[in-house]
Image (cartoon, rainbow, N blue to C red; front, side, top):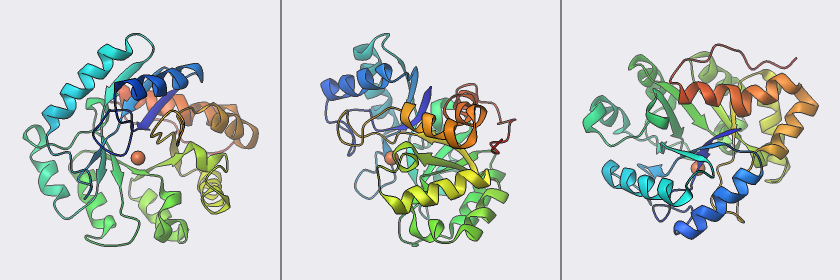
Length: 246
Ligand SMILES: [Fe+2]
């Protein structure tokens, strides 16, 4: 399995604090069947702006060396949407926004309260600029999880959805669980990822969610959301398969 959302880069945000904790997270993920992790530190977040892409790349190289052949770690980011997002994106190579694993896919974090630019406008511009926007955990964003018609319009406009594994398994409680399954049953979800922050608190691992997906939606959908679609990111190819239930 391939985990596209994980705070495994040490000491840069609210994820793991150091290399030892990062190693522990990777060991647990590998034991659970994960072969690849895309490290997604926060960027443009008020608490963790992480504007120095070169620094993140240096930390990533150190982490890869420390983890060895336990699993493969790629670099990306969870980028907070704000009014300067598009300016930054237009700077491309000179800008500091990190797409996922060097691809055209961007993992986008919406603020939990609706502030700043309209997400619809920014997501449209992101698509026109040639990127594939992926919304991180929409089941945790109240103005989307409570308004599935609006979320459907995001999806119709080309936004992809990443639901969090612990929402799928119900470990975050009933509200995100029900929202996640509503989105899954509609066939709107393209990725399930851990959003892990440590080996113990919000831990890694996708196997429990994959088992629940297999039971409810069939093995093909379960495989697509945890392996097939994430692999397309690593190959920097568009998704070709729809994630509709059997
Ligand atoms: Fe995250």
